[in-house]
Amino acid sequence: MLDPRLLRGNLDEVCQRMKVRQVTIDTAPILELEAERRAVQTESEQLQAERNKTSRSIGQMRAKGEDSQALMQRMQVVNERLEALSAELARIQAAQEDLMMRLPNLPHASVPEGKGEEDNVEVRRVGQPASFAFAARDHVDLGEASGLLDAEVAVKLTGARFTVLRGTLARLQRALIQLMLDTHTLQHGYQEVYVPYLVNADSLRGTGQLPKFADDLFRLQGERPYYLIPTAEVPVTNLVRDVILSEQELPLRMVCHTPCFRSEAGSYGKDTRGMIRQHQFEKVELVQVVRPEESDQALEALTGHAERILQMLDLPYRVVSLCGGDLGFSAAKTYDLEVWLPGQQKYREISSCSSFEDFQARRLRARYRGSDGKPALVHTLNGSALAVGRTLVAILENYQDEGGRVAVPDALKPWFSGTHLF
Image (tube, rainbow, N blue to C red; front, top):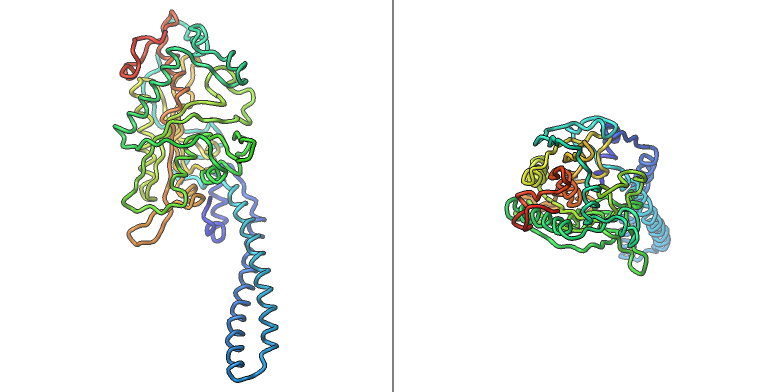
């Protein structure tokens, strides 16, 4: 959520910065609600001052034995009006908060302008895409030929956009999770956490999924209004909701492996083949909570931690800085990591690493107490390190040979016996 003071005092500047996102703000309801709030607040302050003055006068008149009945009646009128104004102010503030909950974050000054994915800016490339002497097969052909990747039975079990993995392919997924968790905890200083896979609406509001993206979520029907998590970002970041941390506790670095559940609303017809876009997938997520002055540096570090997994697996990739038009709702700045897929002959997203500055923290009321003793909002960041299913896809396609066999990357051998998947 944006700082309300920005909308009150710098609305024109906010509108100008939002143009980088290709977002036009309807300022009329913002200005109207703010005018109503100020009017109510002004009248309330005037009536409170009158009530205080009248109360003193009543006391003085009683001390002198004078009749204060007229003032008592006026006091009753003032109290009734103040009660009505309090209810009106609560209504206005609720409307203002609902409106603000639907406004995206302001883009960081370094975010490039652009309308969509085609305008993202490449920052660097690491590794050279493999040059095969044969026509590279995609992960679906490789997996189905081995009998270890089965989308057809998943349709029978559940429906489209689900997959069943068997044998060494299921073991590969488990090995990838172990590699990621051990690397981030032992080398990068993250604390591993285990969290619920179901969350309440407050948690989703805290990280920005609600109210705007309700259609992307799976909501349970029943007595308890729980949601399946779309990413570990939600429960892990909410660990600091309504918490005031000490300055010595920062930075917090947490890593978590969870399944993720997404309805993929709006993605009809996209990536219907294979494991690129699923309703259920595995992910290892990095979350950092830092002091505001450290968030730019923390984003670079977190992105590097995600890159390290790709480097260990010797997978070619590139880093792109998302333009304003492609930026996520809550993010101030995002780097996408895109891995090379020979079967598609293109780079595909495997991780998004984002800084949210104080946007999530304001929703979460996540603060720390600085050296001056006053609570201040933290900055939050997160990134996939990595999306496990897409990493598995990248290994299948990059480590294949002409006969359809797939080698196991050296980095995985401590968790995977054997030299080939199949």
